[in-house]
Image (tube, rainbow, N blue to C red; front, side, top):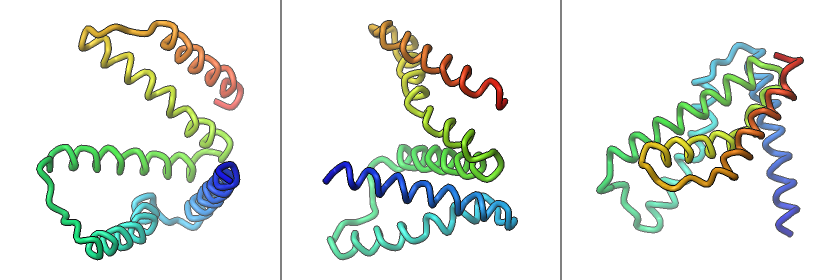
Length: 139
């Protein structure tokens, strides 16, 4: 049953990419796409929170602000890449996000002088090399 939901999620993500691409052709900007993509979720989650009695107050406002800005920036970059690059290239770059998470872990480990799993980091490097090899002719 879980694999069925994964297929459905992939199908809807493909529809999302097609609609973003089509919206880019129609001249709709990335910020407008982000607004209409997000407004439904904001209204729905706010309603669920009010119904459940959960408040919007937090003891970590700066962390929420930073997380929100990083999330907004990443979604804008994704929308921009899908609407301005060809879909195959944009999706390939989108699926490299785990490699960037690995690079982030390496950077923070080195900065904090923590133990680094060099085998895992070598695999992240090989992943980046594989992406460059695959995208080499198109770039």
